[in-house]
Image (cartoon, rainbow, N blue to C red; front, side, top):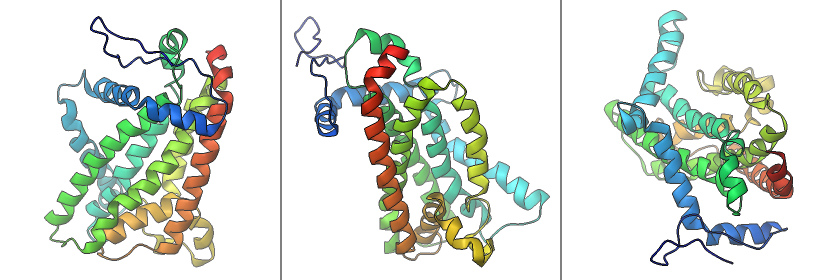
Amino acid sequence: MTMLTDRTGSPTPQTLYTAKPTVLGSVLKELLRRRELIVYLTISQLKQSYQNLALGYLWWFLNPLLWMVVYWLLVVGIFDRGEPNYPLFLLCAIIPWRAFVTSIGQAMTCISGQERLIKQIPFPKAALPLSVVLANTVNLVFGLLVLLAVTLAYGIPLTPYALLLPLVALVQIAFTAGLAFLLSVLAVYFADLQNFMQFFTRIWLYLSPALYAVERVPVRFRTLFMINPFAPIFTSYRDVLMYGRAPDWFWLGVAALLAAAVLIVGFWYFVREEPRIVKVI
């Protein structure tokens, strides 16, 4: 393995590698050795998202709050519906959903948008979608801090079950990373994928218990409804924060198994297609 160095001989973030990994284990080891590069790309992604905005990183907090207001006005103000503590109920879905949808949206451009870097510097290309997910994980963490603050503002005491919040987030992040790997490749082959996904994710949101409780779904459809990973993810966030109870372990376990499967398949597909996408872009 060789490295790019600066004038002092210190390695730069653009570390090179000469090996051509062909198996998942080799790529994972290479990514681990390139953790400094991944950190560099993650920080660059965060800076790029907010560098031209007057309020900068304040949008980490404003974004979920503004989306909460929009949906609150739609559901409560116009349709006169909603659940108890509805703004908090909404935030438990909006914050994780925004992190997810932003991740996959950016993942679909992370390969084609880095054509010059990819062709000039050999490095494990899986670092690109991975850095996108990590950057939005930082956004998710700030969003969850907003969620905790709003929970306390409603006078809802935090219980020991709130300590399960990182576990629920981990299931979401694993599922997001798997789709990010998969979609980042497919977007290279299908230019219209990003436009299609904008409509698909909107439908996906409405078919998830984001604006309404799972109990509103007819019982005969509920099992099918809960197979959607975001159904147990949203309800788990609400269980551990709003209701101070354990999540439904069965359905959260199903979501975790689906997330693990998507992550493995997505990463495997990315590694398999990496030599081809370098030639296509």
